[in-house]
Length: 273
Picture 1 (cartoon, rainbow, N blue to C red):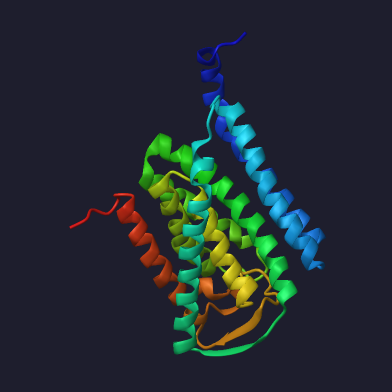
Picture 2 (cartoon, helix red, strand yellow):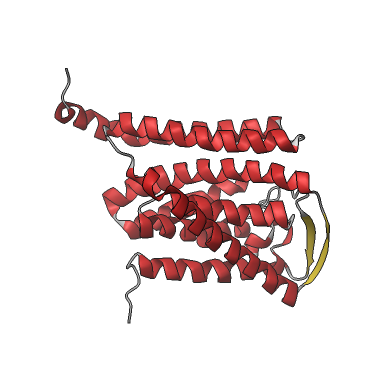
């Protein structure tokens, strides 16, 4: 039988490409499944939550094998619901603050949407939040942090996170950079502060769900779809985000920047006075 010490050199050599490929496959599979059931909200809800749970299970199994670990501490069951709920409260609060600023300083046309569409978006955003956090924070950020430190891990994982949104239909270079600075940094620091994926998953889900599922605005340059409401912001693109959605606006940068600064202090990357 091969001992753990004999396995370690091989595992350490290949763990990053193996985990990167595995989590990329999970992300693509979840997106494909969502596209298949996009027209049926109830199926979209079930498929999305199922894909999210399946992705967590698959990540846990692959990480245990590739890194020869008994415990996957970044997905520890003990802190699951607390991390998810705290993240959801922070993410929802940050996006509500973003929209309140937009309502005050721009013109907003708000009309009724669809409760069922809102449920479908919830499933979609659950799978997006889980698979993206497993890839960008669970693999890219975590392993890079072990090798090069927290600051470089935050910068690199945030930039990669932002650049992947260039494939969205209404993507712009400014929008993807804004995503990297506000969303990527906020989520990366949430992981750094807790060494857990539950907080960034909850934060990511709530931000996206409020954006698309409740307010019905475009999410990260993707085509907007009806949510509980339909919100159209009119005004300078620098404030509204234009066709990319509110994430490309200055209000999102401000609100996410405040959250990131507070999390940075918790992570002790910003000293307390």
